[in-house]
Amino acid sequence: MSNALVEPADRERIVAPTDSVLVGLKRFVTREPAGALAAAIFVLIFALVILGPSLVAYDPVKIDLVSKFIPPGGGDHLFGTDQLGRDLLSRVLVGGRISLGVSLAALVIGVGIGSILGIVAGFLQHWSMQLLQRLMDGLMSLPALVLALSIATALGNSATNVLIAICIVMLPSIFRVIRGATIAVRYQDYVTAAHALGASDMRIMARHIVPNVVGTIVTVASIWIGNVIIIEASLGFLGLGAQPPQPSWGNMLSGEGRSYMVRAPWMAIVPGVAISLTVLASNMLGDSLRTFFDPKSRRVR
Image (cartoon, rainbow, N blue to C red):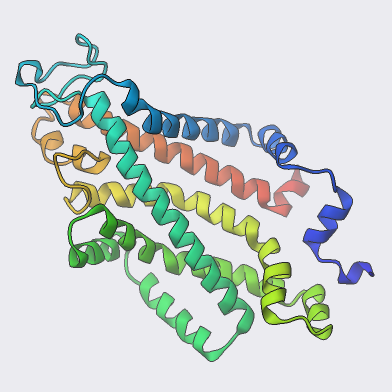
């Protein structure tokens, strides 16, 4: 097989057949130390959210009026308590399960559907795909938060409906980015050669298109993590996500978080810091992944 018929992804495997995930991780840590630190913070937050509630002694929804308004560090309550005596550490950990669970589920579903539609639309160039592109353009003309708010309000107050709203908001952006990357790959010589050899459209997309846009998919997904968390928290703040007494980061900021800002500011500060730290880590990770997968950035280094 001549070099002209070997796609870039195959060339990489031929040049470095022993390359592995561990080697790739080591390369990422070496080239992007800030991204590696952000990834470590992100993993730590997820570990605390998943394992933390089982290690905390307090029920996040149990009312204890004797212990209300205890400041952070007071007694056995590391982050203090709220106006009903509920432990804020327990609530922020359990609330993180809901907030991050909904956000990540929406991210996976939205990126998956958007990537599939983008690859198909970019490769087939059919009139129906042009119609789909016009639909996505129409959705992109609406502000993301306004669109999510409208969809969640129409569907009703629940975490599932927030997930659906976030997925719909993500689709246009994911679709356009992946469609553009697919079009760039579609006209490469190795794709033309595969067509000439009689390969089916499905085989070409699976074997030639997907391996060469997967880096773009990973990058755009990492960039969207922070946006998804903010949208979920915003909808929760407006009362459209998980309903009290079930905590989420968004609804902890709303209601009592606002009402007692002067008397007990930690009630808003604790979930606010959790959201800010998670979004900061995700944004740093997204920037690092975008640089890591960008061939131009590699050549500069």
